[in-house]
Length: 69
Image: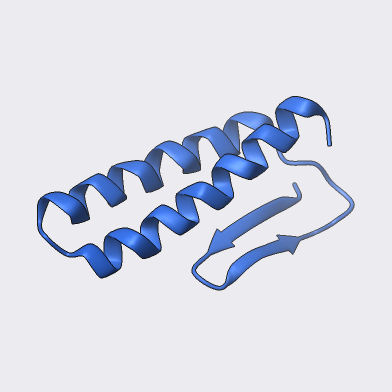
């Protein structure tokens, strides 16, 4: 399975021949949104910002999958 993985440093692709299912990115988006909210609740705004950036990257990947890109 090919996956694009988001991190603080950007998006990385593993195994370009295969395709990752759309729900993989949506699950990652939800997980990182929960991490962001948890960090905000605990007052750790620096980590919340980093987690939000990762969530935003997975959001873009999810939309690309929905659009068929």
